[in-house]
Image (cartoon, rainbow, N blue to C red; front, side, top):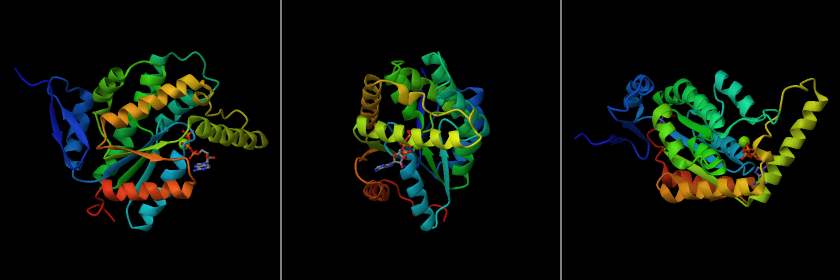
Length: 266
Ligand SMILES: Nc1ncnc2c1ncn2[C@@H]1O[C@H](COP(=O)(O)OP(=O)(O)OP(=O)(O)O)[C@@H](O)[C@H]1O
Ligand SMILES: [Mg+2]
């Protein structure tokens, strides 16, 4: 009998599963690209609760890497493509009501499949460093744990629709949820004030998840912790309770030891 799946390891932690029985049209299309990129490019993701500083830190890392001469692509999920940004609006706008947890998860993966095909793989193929603000760990933490759909559903869908693409490194920003959510809510209030004074009154907001309760975010944090324990070679947990500068320093140190960037496109 054939083994259930053949996992090939390439260049550090990034893996792609080739399982002949599971091969789908989606996997088939990106498989050829995957084979050629595995020794090139680096895929680094940022994870953590709302307001932990992912976007802030990703910008800082991108600036530092570019200053060192690397080619960097900054992208985000949900989103990152024209179609994905439309899906993002549906998912994050607090005007979206009654979305079932399953529909929410399906939309996340719809945006991700497009993002992988259109942005992430081509950039890795060019040998660039891809920095991504949230990826499948977010789906596992928010929909798997937060919405209680379970890890297995997320991991299976990622195999089917995301080619099981794994980051080389995931920076998990961690701080007290009250602190980080406070930051996120203040930022959102500021953004909506700016919107009210502009003409974009109907542009929507990105507050849908921030309106969840404390128990939801406790489960999300628990999910992130479980992922970090399960995959310590990939996920580094960074204390994000200090200033943006001190967190940036911690990230730079972690990146230097965890990812060998010396062979990448400068
Ligand atoms: N270390 C920090 N100390 C204080 N404020 C911070 C820190 N890092 C970021 N901020 C501020 O907190 C707010 C949230 O930060 P940011 O948008 O980077 O978080 P995020 O993790 O990307 O949030 P979200 O998940 O909602 O996108 C922003 O207004 C940002 O300027
Ligand atoms: Mg952000």
